[in-house]
Amino acid sequence: MSVNSFTSRSITKEAAARLIALAIAASERVGFEPVVAVVDASGNLKAFERSDRSSYLAVNIAIDKAYTAASFGLSTAEWVDLLEDRGASNLRHVPRVMAAAGGFPITEDGAIIGGIGISGGSWRQDQEAGEEALRNFAK
Image (cartoon, rainbow, N blue to C red; front, side):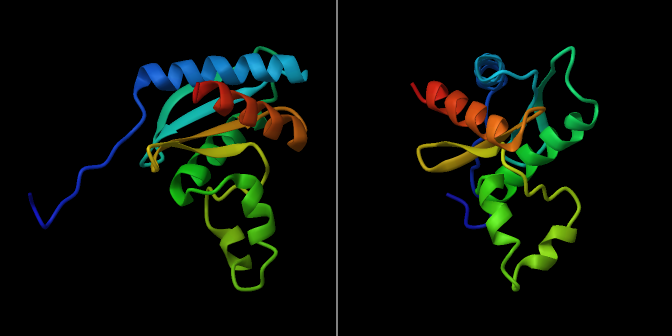
């Protein structure tokens, strides 16, 4: 075993595609046409889907939600409260940090393997769809 490196884990393309499908189904049930992005553990885009009638602006928002969640291991809804803290408020100026509900870290056996970002609905709809998708993903 090396003392100068470690093994990291990351979401597979098959798992990312399955999670995208679950998020789209959840978004349809909630009542909106989403943009869904899944990033790997390093924050690079792994899978992506944009519904036909979703907003163009939602594309980058979904990707940045996934990136933020994977990078810090916190949901983007948690970032909303975190950035209200005076000690962390300057983080809102860091490129790609997205403090809007709908981004979640993807974990397996306690390790972050990626992140998912959903955009296109209200913050409540994005959050609800993401929570449902991750619940079904874990089954």
